[in-house]
Amino acid sequence: MDADWVARFADEVIAEAERRAPGKPIVCASGLSPSGPIHLGNLREVMTPHLVADEIRRRGYDCVHVLSWDDFDRYRKVPVGVDPTWAEHIGKPLTSVPAPPGSEHPNWAEHFKAPMAAALADLGVEFHGISQTQMYTSGAYREQVLLAMRERKRIDAILDQYRTKAKPKAQAQAVDADEAAALEGSGAAGEDDGSGAGGYYPYKPYCSVCDRDVTTVTAYDDATTELTYTCACGHTETVLLSEHTRGKLVWKVDWPMRWAYEGVVFEPSGVDHSSPGSSFVVGGQIVREVFGAEQPIGPMYAFVGISGMAKMSSSKGGVPTPADALSIMEPALLRWLYARRRPNQSFKVSFDQEIQRMYDEWDTLTRKVADGTALPADQSAHRRATTTASLTLPDTPRRLPYRTLASVVDITTGHEEQTLRILREFDHEIAGLDELRPRLDKAQHWVSTYVPADERTQVREEPDAELLASLGDVERESLRLLAEGLDEHWSLDGLTTLLYGVPKVQAGLDMSAKAATPELKAAQRAFFVLLYRLLVGRDTGPRLPTLLLAVGRDRVRRLLAG
Image (cartoon, one colour):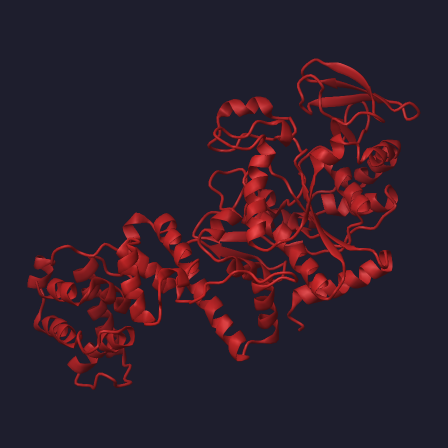
């Protein structure tokens, strides 16, 4: 159990909650900014507290996972692929920015929240969503805002302790700009902290004329709560902060305010927060000295990468989202990737050929769990991937290897009758393709979306006469031996034996001999390359037994004989 990081954090959180607020629901928290596609790096911000909260629920405790949608954050920049005229909305709250062209959603924030919420539902993540737009505009935080303004000198003094501290060189090297953007789970570390020429004010109004936050507070009266601001658009206004709801606390004050308001016991944060002056470090001091509460416990989580693609960053187009991952992998597998690694361990989500190896590893673990040979920590990770305290995630009724399904749909280009015919060679008891779903559909989507066109399998229509004419006696004999053995060995296992056996027979060995000399291995490799070139015109391709079954005996003989 020592390797089970979720159980260890659950122990700590339960003990801490009992110390802070015995008998009350335990609060775990996440925060996401729907400023653009919410990607797989951001998903760690949610999965880490989800797994811990779920473990706490499994133990019979009342635990809520709060997910703050930072939809009252300012719109910072126009993402790649969006009409440049959207730049006119920079500085407005995300909920006041029109959704991208063609969207069915009422605003920018909802457009990016919706697919994430749907993906979290598919992943079995239960959470209590909180819109920060709704909280601020309803006046829910009014007392906290007024308190922060009364304590502005104290806050300014705390922030001033960190303003001159530079990041250590090692930290600066470890986190580049894209990585920092990906790791900032909630709010925005780059937002100004409230300093201005007119003094320090931790509250930032949105202008009542242009609705942007390019405003400067010039005066505030604690007794009357009169606040005067000017805007870059030229507007000047005096409002009563005790009634004003079109503004928010700056991020480094907003986050600790929420910890106190929600009573958060556990919340992870990105590794960028380990630097001096970061939101998490400063927030710990502000929540104690200003809001009279305690900082959550929680780990720094490491970067999540993409196999075969550049690092994820919301500032660039085409970043893979949880919905993208769920289009090619079952929910339990995606959960497992986040459950099996400690938060401070980085890992990659595979969209390239590595997904096949990842699925093989998952299926091997599933078999070990079923037969009782999995290690305790692996058993725990598997259980957390396949179930939650309240549900069992859907599974494919009849599992075939992902790489097999991908090879077959690649060869058949998704033709259902052909696909069923070939897959029955792997499992004669398959009644229909529905038994193989959703895994079959995930594999088909992966092939059609993520396998480059030049790597797709296209079986030759006609024999390669030129190549056949150039073959020597040894190569011709190998093709003859294969063709003669097809009928007797026409099954997955049989063809595997035949394909490896032909070079053995040519070397004077029995087809089932266990020999594995370097010479024999070289002969087998050369034989396989020849078959690929004759069947698909490349040196590599799907596993040959699968390919032969898909092509069919008669067509194989024709392509190999000319």
